[in-house]
Length: 414
Image 1 (cartoon, helix red, strand yellow):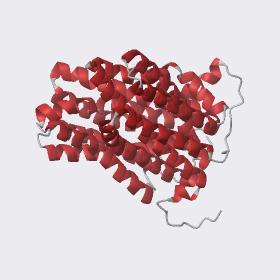
Image 2 (tube, one colour):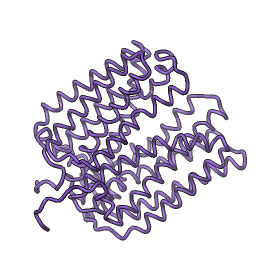
Image 3 (cartoon, one colour):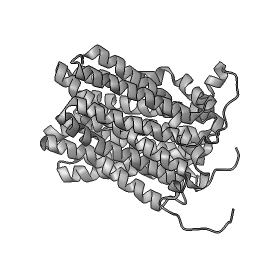
Image 4 (cartoon, helix red, strand yellow):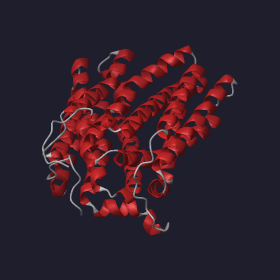
């Protein structure tokens, strides 16, 4: 390969057909998931009028990832990841078809739905480490950071548009919403099947406790990965304000439901704009330091949002938070992919995804608990200050991570 430096192409990752199929499949899956999430929540509340059941929907989807963390990552390392992803999409299609069937036969009720949510959680538990580990097998290392940016923009776009589409489709009928989601999942599964068999260094270890715990062991020993994962865990745990947005919309900013929608979409807009910019202008130097700066800006934005009494200042603060979080995610996910050997990548990603899920779930619990004790505004402000403190403490505690410079090529063997 020539050493000549060439201009970065914003669509560099899409020069590889395998990645293009992967990208569109992942987008359609995320889009369908958002439609199902919105529809099943609305339908459950319509049927029961019990908000407690809404919390259980999320809990049933998270439990399999936590319970099977030692298994799902090992499976992603021992077997063909493309086949695993396709199989998981098929299971998601079956679960969506069950929801459609319950709707058409008027048998929609909490217990059967919770069983279906458990099925969704099961497929996502196996899907997450496999799909996170598959992308680095589809493209050369020099295009990996570009792929990370596009992966993130895809997810953010689905997160912004999906709930809106889900709401509109649900307005036409829950059966229509589930039917559209089912069609998207089936198309997504076909796209994955079309991906040529990728190169993958599969683990040949016998399944022992040592091999099952290899993801935890690697993260513990590799300070770069440990610092990146734990930074996200505690930053989101302290800085999350999503759960309290209805309180801010109604009681602090007094903007009503339309304002809540505006607040909920603002971080995603900031994130997707930043992701597209990163795809065109990737981070070339001081990547580690920029990750910490991103976390610090996220914390500062949280404080501004907590103190704001202007809806437009709040929207801007949330958009800045989304942009800053995108920078942190971009650097973190690229570093984890580059620093993790392929044969253990599934197990490391399984642990990472549980940490991400736990930080989101526990972050909402932290925010809600603190808000009930000291009020919503102090809870958000204290969380933002805590995130700023985490950025400083982690930057001092993980100097090797702070000193990472380039994301354009894999680091030297370690």
